Image (cartoon, rainbow over all chains, first blue to last red; front, side, top):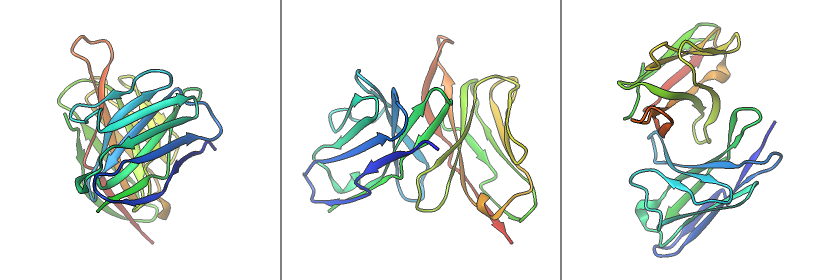
Amino acid sequence: GAVVSQHPSRVICKSGTSVKIECRSLDFQATTMFWYRQFPKQSLMLMATSNEGSKATYEQGVEKDKFLINHASLTLSTLTVTSAHPEDSSFYICSALDRNRETQYFGPGTRLLVL
Amino acid sequence: QQPVQSPQAVILREGEDAVINCSSSKALYSVHWYRQKHGEAPVFLMILLKGGEQKGHDKISASFNEKKQQSSLYLTASQLSYSGTYFCGTEELEDSGGGADGLTFGKGTHLIIQP
């Protein structure tokens, strides 16, 4: 089946640093990728929709200058958490849309801990 | 607006059936269903777009009512592997009636299957 990878799987960083998370679709082309955030014991929250070759669409309340999204190719989208703070600690999940199969495939997630 | 999921939790024995409901006060563009196991990224199950639609296979299927405000996920003859938290995600119809607003997730339904 289709696979989406995320890197890194876990990251610990100091407050004020920037962290880049990569999301790759390994065996299909994804014109659309989604970025989610999930706090412990809470529901998923869609942060933004990333379309290849164009600017990402951010959900209300998500700061586009803080969460930079780049979808430079049909298989790669990156999320950069700039000047991370402890409240940004969360589980970040990406998914990629395979339009041919009308299916969304999730990456394994990235656990971010900001100290 | 966040969709309302019910029940919050359900405990079943293997082989029993379960129904999980997801409802909105507004007409929806789509309903997405996901299953998430503890500590893992969610897995996309299916998307429903049309009023009156029923989708899936024998064991896991879902319906979307004619008014497009309510969806149910049906788990038949449950297996141990079905345990997890089930989320519905909904897209509301834009006020203009054309496309969809962003995806919002319900709080989840915890499903525990016992041998």
